[in-house]
Structures are given as C-alpha cells and as structure tokens.
Length: 231
Image (tube, rainbow, N blue to C red; front, top):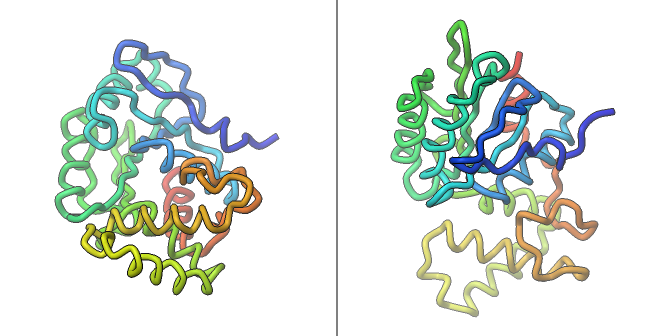
C-alpha cells in the first residue's frame, strides 16, 4: 500500500537527538510545517514515494537551520549506506540570487556537491543533490505566492475580492510582497473554510473546503523535477 502524506514526514531532527531510521533513500529538507505538508501531499498526489521529508528543529528554524541539520544527518552512521540524494526546498523570498547562494553554501559546508542552479541535479558516485526554490528559480516570493496562483485558477472570482480587501485595509499595501501573499492566502482560507476559517496554510490539505487544489498544474514543475531526481 502506498504511504500516506503523513508517513512521508520522517521526523523533526533535533541536534542532540539524531536517529538513523532513514527509510526511502532520498531526503527533502523543508523550512517548516507549511512547506513540508504541502510537499508530502503533492508527492502522494503524483505518486512519488522515494523521499523522506525532514523539518529541522534547531535554533533559528528555516534555512538558517539547514546547515546544522545536514551536519547532524551526514554524521549519522546510516547516512552513507542508505541516502542517495538530498534536496533543499526553500522560499525565494525577496532576493532569489542571495537565497540560492545561502543554499549552495549549506551543501558545500557539509562536504556535499553544490548545484550551481535551482532545479538542476548534481551527482557524484556516492550522492546527488539539488535545490528547489518556491515560487520559482528566479521570481521573488514564497510558498503562499504559489498557493495563491493555484487557488485563483480554481476560484477566479475570489481574486478581485481579496485585492479589494487589501485596498480597503490599506496597511498591507505597504508590506513586502511575501507578507502580502501570506495575508491574502489567509484571507482566502478564512473566506472558504467554513469548518475552520482560522486554519493555517500548513494544515489545509485534509480539509474538504481547502481552496488550493493539490492537483494544480501550477505545481507540476516541482513534482516533475522531484520525480526525475530519484531516477
């Protein structure tokens, strides 16, 4: 029986509580619950079952925790025997180029091959690595930016409503695009999820009123790359 989305999430890794139960040969390191839960449901929807997903659980969180988490993982006795590939997944944020440089350093700092570009697999005899950036390799933004695109494809009538709300609120007009995207997706969720209007993006996927279709073609570039990464 194929694993569920929840079963793909291996665990949170604490710096002093490293265990060695790697299960599927390939690891995805995510910034947090929202990214991890989105990816786990996307992989199950596209029938890609070759990854364990990990959320670093060390001080700072996010990309700042990748380096220490990967150092702990590569130090596990079973890493070299079991792990054939590692993918770092992160938001592009305001400066995709700067974010890419920081992700490349994570691999280099841990003695792993460092890809020059996002969505480009690099391999040695022992291991392959890659970087996935959301919403794309070149555009600023975050997971919420990508989810909004998929949601508005399915519910185009909501786009104007949300934009009108942003204007009415006025203050968000001064926010950075990343923060605006977060505000918009939460507004959309509140307007569509009658059963849980306060739901966070991280826990949308089990809700029947979820306005973001996991089958959206907007996510194909991520699923297609991850599917090809393990081959």
